[in-house]
Image (cartoon, rainbow, N blue to C red; front, top):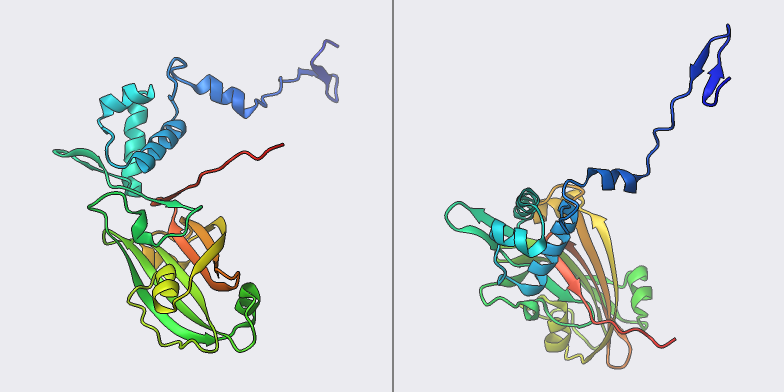
Amino acid sequence: MSTGERELPGGWRVRARPSTDVRPEVIFQRQRQSPDRLNNSARRTYDLLRSTLVTTGRNICLGERELTDAMSASRNTVRAVLQQLAKEGMVTREPKNGTRATGSLLLRIDELSPFDEYITEPSTRIEVRVLECQPLGCPPMVRDRLRLPAGWTVVMIESLVVQDEQPLGLTVNYIALGEDEAPDFHVDEPDVLLILERQLGISIGTSSTTVGAVGADEQSAELLGVEVGAPMVWLEDVIEDDEGQPRALSQLRLRGDRVSFSATAYRGTA
């Protein structure tokens, strides 16, 4: 019996087919249409263009021919990427006006700032609209997270974050109040940092930040105008005063297609 053959009942012999299992990276390399193109990949082209739009604002030329040269990508690839960005609201495409960037919110997670301080475009407007505000007493889980002394209470404020009249995200703030602090403060400035500083007279110290990803639930999807399960960035801050006492637990759900984060990192010594 030759190599690669096997015998069946009755004396029949068949030649075994060679294995068709091909590693994913081999398939990817075979499917490349233009190996001379640096970014003949919609995924790579999308990532490069989106990050450039986020970091440079609206100053980049978005003509298909110019982008083809700038990113060394095929025109079909560039067109597909622009269509995806338009679907996400990152750019607008109009027959007479061409393609224009709409802007994206870039948040520095190594800084504590109100939303409106992140605006880099003069025409961009950020609002935080209160949806609900109520005292909660002192829920045990919040008490433990904020290490609250006996007698302290918590106020919950939920708000809708809007950029240029388009819903951007939801924020829920659990604000700790000492025994001598009244819960009837004004929420004209619903940003948690401004409430702590201006309404309660607190000097803010540091914050511990956690970032993750979640899918939009039904209520979030309805408020933000996205589909159920749409990707969202989840961010939590535990904000302390200058004496180290946690004063707020702030949680945000932000549309994954409208927000980006930046930080300055340093390599530690070995």
